Image 1 (cartoon, rainbow, N blue to C red):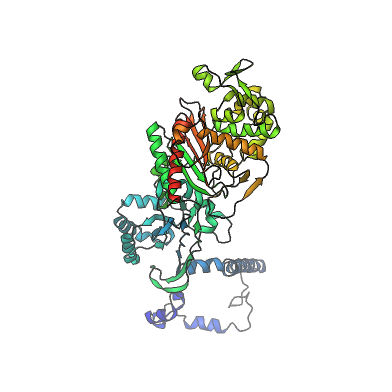
Image 2 (cartoon, helix red, strand yellow):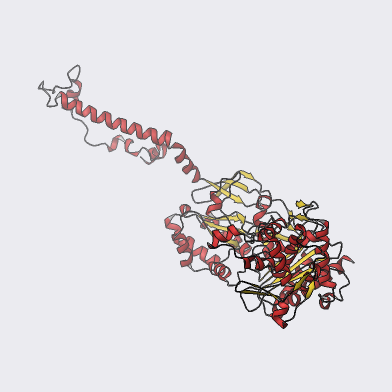
Length: 631
């Protein structure tokens, strides 16, 4: 019998019977009866007596048998035809395994070709519970725990909660990867994938620009893309990594392997190589970026502040040469598998470490906004370069008193001054009067024309639009009408006016480059994206530029800060009330004057006066930049 079983297989054992093992053989009478069946009716007994089975009963039996046959036939059709492909796929899955070779992302360079983000070799350890036999579960857990140096209970818990294939380790060390590979025959359901790890060379210094990557989420996997994401793919989640995802992302390689039921590799059936993503060159000058980071970090420590930001850009092309946000974080934490505890520490930090303050946060601009109010007055003809207004020290409107800073500090007035002098002295009362002359709608118009109240369009996610309040906005948001006093507050950059350091840099660049509003870019480019040009009179540009120049060089300006700087510059200070004990310190400037090469804006939160805090940092940046240019 054993030979026959080997011959026919175990699918048919009940039909294979040897003669010597048969029992209950028929006797001669039974044979005689069988032989006498010739032509006799099936409904009669052998002795000629009528059968007890009536026609109705036989019909019922036939019907039952026929029904059972139809059910079996339908089930066979379902299994063979309708669900055949499904079962075939499952059967193939038992002997075929797909391995993914995750494509490396493109390299990110600074404008000079220095590497900002690259890939290092990495391994990803996976576990598929469906391929892990129950009788081997404990042995596999024990062996993995030994290799990974983690408790058995940790892996058991991960396995218990798994609903499908899971990632055990996202960045497995090479020595542990070798151990896993060596023990692969004893690690059923375990798979090792090549998965490049992103590495950011400058960590905190470029974190807010570059952003970071993370493993593809459920939402990423569900996207209907031409090349869908697969489990284990890295996806850009912030900064350039996110905005340039379509460029930086590569195409994975795949390997189809024939394996035994125990997981033993029997050879490759199909293989495709991964294709790395495209490289990206940014406008950032990493040497300048490092210097600005260090100078700003030193300043906030010196003045006892915690948060600050800075933007350096080319006023003609809009290329961002440096962008700093403090405090920062090490984006390499995300490149590997960040722990839940560490992630919660990052997102719950009261200083909001992940926020890019340079373009993602908006603040009252304070006196830097007086450039816009001056423009509104000059463009409409409400004032000219020669118009003089008397500073009374304060303006009373209803039951409110709107003071000039000089009156508030020493009860002195500026006398009769023009717009250039008002910009130099940052005289509130002059701009209060101009605001009253032109009205808030005109101020809003020129603020919008200069790019405020809207996103700049830089290739970074999370940018804020800021806020230029209007009557309709206030009514819809606060349910209140617009009050005359709000026009006065707006005219000096207070009230509900909010701008980002990047937005203010673009305003300054417009005056620096002769009246062209350009879109800032984080990518290296020789062609500027001009939003609009020739929308301001030459006389307006000349007057405001002269005012900004006198802020630096005039007898009552910032000569005490910039006096020994060989490169002439122009700029505007701002000390914006923030609700805290100290104002936000602003300074935005361009150099050299009158033909600038760079624009710099520095903002330090809750730090004091812009002239004392931010202007000295801008001076250091100018010194560093132009010293290097002269080499």
